[in-house]
Amino acid sequence: MDVKYVQTTCPYCGTGCTFNLVVKDGKVIGTAPYHRSPVNEGKVCPKGTYAHEFVNSPDRLTTPLIKKDGKFVEASWDEAYDLIAKKFKQYKPDECACLSSARVSNEENYAMMKFARGVMKTRHIDHCARLCHASTVAGLASTFGSGAMTNSILDIAESKCLFIIGSNTFEQHPLIGRKVMQAKANGAKLIYADPRLTPTGKQADLYMQFRSGSDVAIFNGLMQEILKNGWENKEFIEKRCKDFDKLKEEVMKPDYSLENVSKISGIPAAQLKTAAEWIAKSGATAILYSMGITQHTTGVDNVRSVANIQMLTGNLGRPGTGVNALRGQNNVQGACDMGALPVVFTGYQKVIDEAAHKKFADAWGFPDGICEAKNGYEVTTMMDVLADKPGELKCMYIMGENPLISDPDLNHVAKAFKNIEFLVVQDIFMSETAELADVVLPACCYAEKDGTQTSTERRVQMWRTAQAPPGQAKLDWVIMKEIATKMG
Image (cartoon, rainbow, N blue to C red; front, side, top):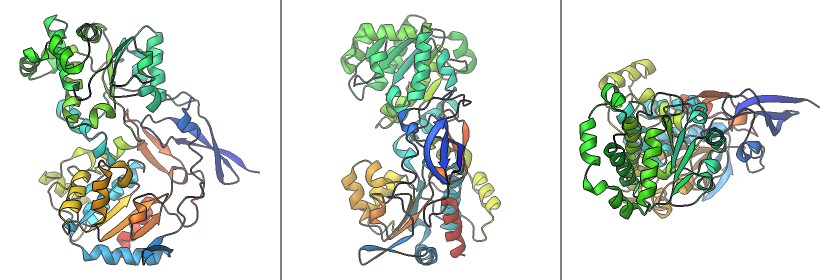
């Protein structure tokens, strides 16, 4: 009997916990603590505890599948590649679209971005961040210059006041919730704002239940109260902020008086006043948020409001402060950083920037160039075009995404997929989306590959190979490389 421990990073949420995979005779059979991680300090939540169970599931895809007469039949890799290469070559670049994934590594996201723009020459590439934290990227990039969490997870324990909105932290990011409780144990105040009383809310010193959609009004009301009482950080504003007068002009409108915000939101004015005072006067306030404010018609404005109140009070750039965006999936941050988005290359270099476009074209060295220097379709736009303009988009290549479950308005998405002429899905399981594919390609999971992922705090950590993949499954980047080779 051969038993070994392989250090890896959790494939579930964006916290970035480290643990060991227990490998017996070449097969992953369990997880064990890794005590030297500064993120989770040897602790693992229920998700991470059972992160080994799906690895050797009998439902894993093990061989390429090609749909013939409405049914999948097993095929060799060469058969699958030949069909894919032949079909991909038949379509014009703007008739094709690619979806990358927040579940695969940084390296594989980069490979998909390069494959889409360099091999298929298409502008249309996106991934699930569009549906969860794209508003974080847009909102924070326009205020701070970078669309990411401003502080580390460890800093949260040093907060004197925590304001959590749009996040059920204790259930969705339990090890970050542990840092919140450490701060509370040291005397920090916890403000929780959510339409539902969640397990996180039950631990709050101040719970503010509000009507969905009133987020911006709440933040503007809090900022008005801070300004009325002179609680703003004047030195920070003068040295590090711009357009303060414009912000002040907006938030001081009568619309955002505590009484009016109370009517809009349903939060008692006294609670709003208490929250404003705690946020402004604690000396170190951290705001934590997640998809409760980003999966929203005004998601970007919500995120900007979070940034504004932290700039107003000077709660940035110090331990225990900051705007802490909690990413939902393990590598949402990394997939965005790598450029698996329709408007940016790697490192958020704009696609429409001729200098950036030329830099990537020159670096990649494709003899026939790369995609146009124009923004591509977002995933939501892809679905609209497929559903409402049949024939404009004809071909899709999807890696590690399941739009028929994850996208909004599933009936609309189902209608959209009926209009795809050729669909390739690359995944570890037969998902609802894969069921509709013309070709399904079996991929490796996190326990079967080396690679990196970037957590919500921008910490880059490794996956390490613990076992061989099942059957004929291959690494995602290897599949893309071999398709590209077949296409010449």
